[in-house]
Length: 238
Image 1 (cartoon, rainbow, N blue to C red):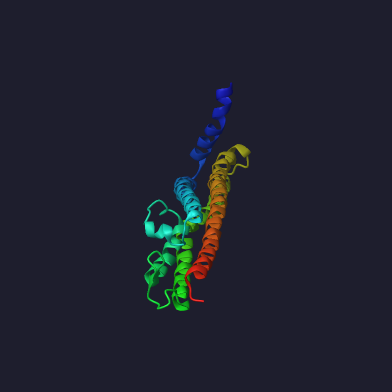
Image 2: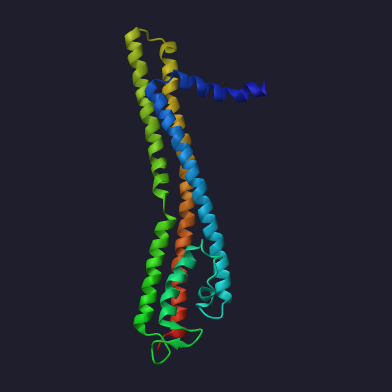
């Protein structure tokens, strides 16, 4: 009895699909492919953001222990490559080290300190890196948002089309009995069901990943400000 009850939804879906018109079947196929694409994208993006978060946590933990702001950059470690915060850090350090190497106390300025122009170049590089990393983090999120907004409307299109087809068939046959239109309507409603099944997980995944991206972006902004303030205090001319 239990196994029979559990098989009822699947049987209902298969029956509704069989009763769908060609347009409805095509829309269901498109929605199914869209679902596979959305789940694949969410899995890949979730893994990417997870790696970025863990690498960022490791980097920030080590950076707080570093003797100077550019210590980790001079080590050329590959441990933090997945971190967008480390990318911002590296962009700023490249300009700082090229202008003045605090480790060796050899600089281009006679005072052995960085000039305002050199510090502004490092600040610009950090801000540009923040913008670039934000775009990288948001890559493919537009496609997921498209799945969220498009799937319900595509399902609704299939439903309206199927209902219209069912009533047209009823007019041709000349029968107003429910049994004449019920199969066609069930097939038409299937597209809305599939559309919602695609949109709901995509919407949840989109919101969760958007929140994680915002957190990483805030970390990048905060770190850039703190790092540059520390570098300015240590290395810039008074």
